[in-house]
Image (cartoon, rainbow, N blue to C red; front, side, top):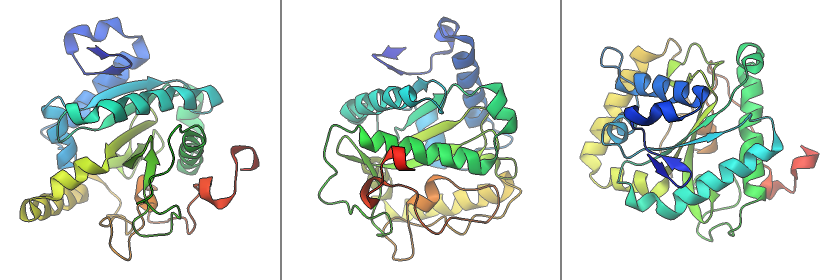
Length: 252
């Protein structure tokens, strides 16, 4: 079950985990395997069915020490992801106390998410890749860690209208760019699947498809806007990721 700090989900071994970790995995399993209400992201369901996803657990996202846990998980995943399969992603569940589960708004979770990314970048041991712009407002910018470009997805307990972004724990789904490139190799199939994803989204969420959902590299696309989608159609005009904007964690 355990690959150093990373886990594959083996139902027969879940009892070895702490209760909250077991609960998170079981809820995730139920969400991704639901046949009556299929999860919209088809590549994610394929990775799940093929057992190519890897899982990690982190403590309270408000604690500074939690960033070090996430960094260790993501570093290990980066080093080994190409051995897990072409539909692999890293799923990180945060221990989310009842107090913030019940009281935090979507915007408060949004702030936590961007704090996590900025803090991760601050302790990254590897330089930002030369081929990825450092300005988040460049259409081909994306978050990088340990030299690897990643697409980030955040789900929270506060999302209600967008069940595609709801989870009972704060959760990250982190997908390497190389996985997405593999998916796009068969362009006709990829376009067909993307069309099916949008059809599923319309049924899955009570909010309309968010206008920020777009394709990587398109001139009118900014990847960071898709990392954290709000429960309504609003968005933020400026990326909160401060590493290359002269900001530090203490000054945010």
